[in-house]
Length: 320
Image 1 (spheres, rainbow, N blue to C red):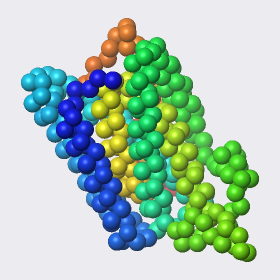
Image 2: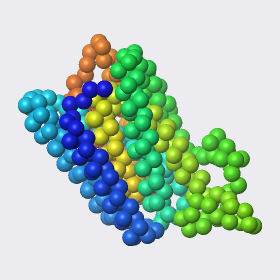
Image 3: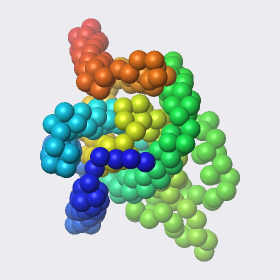
Image 4: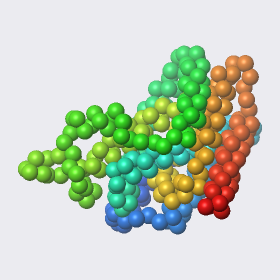
């Protein structure tokens, strides 16, 4: 798999990710279990977004310095930005599922932070493996692009039809299987995943939550990774845009959890984005849609969906 990123930039990226996770863990241990308010979540979201843009600036400079091509540097940095925005957008749907899981298991708000932190680390490891495998497959079998494209279109259509329905975990097969395999306590035992009842070591509801979060990561990785390959096949851009989108997931969860009802139409927008990206992938050998146009379409769809969501929420409030 070919990449325009120099080796030192790979090292820098890994160092930034490790440092970010370390800071997050240190703060997690220092603050302990506590409720995260909208202000704290907003501040951290802005920090993660700023870090992503700074890295993209460094990426642009590295390409320009290494190749001497301003045009290539602009193109690659635009690919990173488009990929980052797509992954960040798709993460919103991921967050709504997290919210459903936490609500179903009545997870106390001050325990949710640790669960999300573990989920983020798992997602980074999982996506790194899947991206490397996906990149190798694309290199060996070009026709897989069409499979990815068709899969994204079908996923988008399915998401559109499911957007207006009330989600439920009652009939979730993974949850039913977990309950059959593991005895689970009725109550939480702090932030522990295992507890002792009647002299027997059994799982707590928090362990069930972690398992479902991990399963959710797998499902959404299958959706989002083909989406970024529609923008670029450079493994560095695919990996970095994914990871930077994931790093801010915890802060974005607490931010969106507070305003989820205001963006109730967002899933429709995400469905349209998936269909657009899938179509772009299927047409790649016929007509290659420029990255700038892809970025514009994604931004336009998200903006329109969010504005319509806020307006419809305001209208509903005014009539009630």
